[in-house]
Length: 271
Ligand SMILES: NC(=O)c1ccc[n+]([C@@H]2O[C@H](COP(=O)([O-])OP(=O)(O)OC[C@H]3O[C@@H](n4cnc5c(N)ncnc54)[C@H](OP(=O)(O)O)[C@@H]3O)[C@@H](O)[C@H]2O)c1
Image (tube, rainbow, N blue to C red; front, side):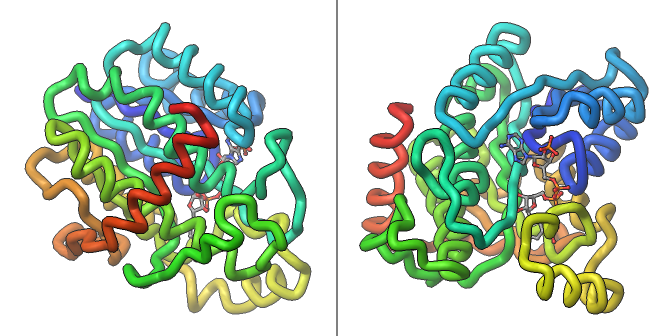
């Protein structure tokens, strides 16, 4: 039986991953903002013997620190971190730390939370860190003239920078944490609530094209669940094809860019 922490575990792909893990006899600790959704998720997963929900706002440094403290005090050992909390917006809004919210949640919170929870996964044999992302080419560039503040806000181009930053963190972990296994997983296109803050035209297009373009949430969650529960896969890998556990790409990224992303992340979070 493994214990897996899932950020973004109270809905969508994270919740489905929780379902599959519990069905296989594992225990999950879910993190999300909405306690009502959290309670419903725990109930749906079979109650407190199998699942637990912790409320946290991962959009801020303080929120991540509080979440990590809470997790470590209750769960000093975790087999895997499955980090998928995410938002999708093209608005030029700012978090309490004066950051772009997509950058803050979909990248920085994963870096920050994982760094603070490393002692828990280092304490288990074959500990794992798995990040849920959108697939982008491995040579996706980061424009350091706007990264990480995204000022001036580059609109759509911010999204690919945020995604590839996740890949760089996994490449860093593979180098720095030889006893852990770290991976980034493309979840594909899935009909969840993730589009709720996008412009109306994009929501309409997604609703119309959804039936032909999207994959079932069960398929999106399959690789993340496989990675959290299976030993022996190569650390520092990218799982590009949802539902196909044989398609593994080694993360060969520019080490200089990885170092820059990590330096920026350290400076912002202190972790
Ligand atoms: N669906 C797709 O087609 C797709 C495609 C590419 C990548 N992804 C990525 O896959 C991941 C899962 O998305 P999904 O499709 O399952 O969407 P979803 O159903 O909207 O789930 C997003 C999750 O993130 C949590 N979250 C958002 N902001 C948070 C914050 N500030 N603090 C704590 N938790 C927060 C939400 O919790 P609350 O509801 O409590 O806020 C929710 O559990 C996301 O990172 C998303 O970017 C999805």
